[in-house]
Length: 378
Image 1 (tube, rainbow, N blue to C red):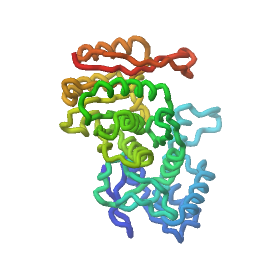
Image 2 (image 1 turned 135 degrees about the horizontal axis):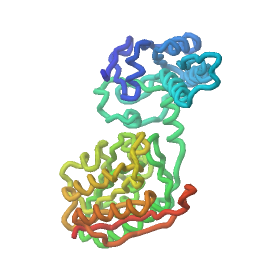
Image 3 (image 1 turned 45 degrees about the horizontal axis):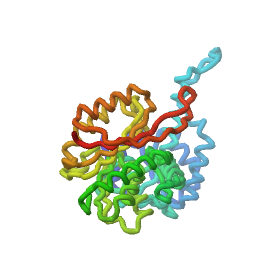
Image 4 (image 1 turned 90 degrees about the horizontal axis):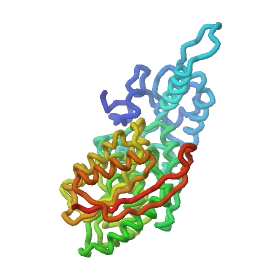
């Protein structure tokens, strides 16, 4: 599917992946400038007929358009009418109807210039907007790009919520699809592990990697515990996680010259040929299939991410380097036994384990162990 769409008077627009199906449907794309935003019926009719409406101008007025569409969303249903004698609609059909409505609501869009500045007034503070949408920062090839109004609203809500981290004496944000740093116990385990390792490092300047940085919590913890002499590298497979880490680093650290937030990529892909003294990896601990982007940080089908991590890590770790591996026994003792076999088969040994026992919200299992393995090569 094409990634660009031309519309007058804006010109060539980049279409992020999640919006392409809507934009390239048969309904057509139409720009409604600020002076036309009061024509609720006209905008709604265009969307109702399958089109995409691009709006620009006063954000309050755009929000009013969105409210109008929400109030009339039942009229957007594409559900096939049932015969009078049918008593109920199947679960699948109800689900599809809901999805159709949500997809239709996403057809009200606004646009950002090539630098990610939304063409609305006042302009929302959403830096690294393209990455927050799950795209690489250069994906738009210096062209303006589209974003749905409902997505902007969701991003704003997500970035307002803060998560206090006691070990950092600070609060962090987490964008959509990014695992929020809610577990104080996990951070405490990593803090204790980092402190035990930092005492043993002989070099005054160490090189640290945070693989799968998420919100940037462990990146900031590494900066705090290893000190300003350490060179810290962070990345994640999700561009939205990379963007979130950038935002938190910029907000928390006045001097962040030694923190390098890399472009998004799988495991070690962003780090090229760097060798590290310490590699931090809070691995996905639920042995289950990934069904959405938000589950990438916690789900690992057949522990394939763990296996690939240990296949690659020797190429990025110094001979006397240390791995700090976070894991939980949420998937039971078999998953832990498999993990420890993977560690052993990869030529690493456990020097120590830092554990915390935490309560869960699951009825079948009220407690689980969070642990950080301190690993070195045999």
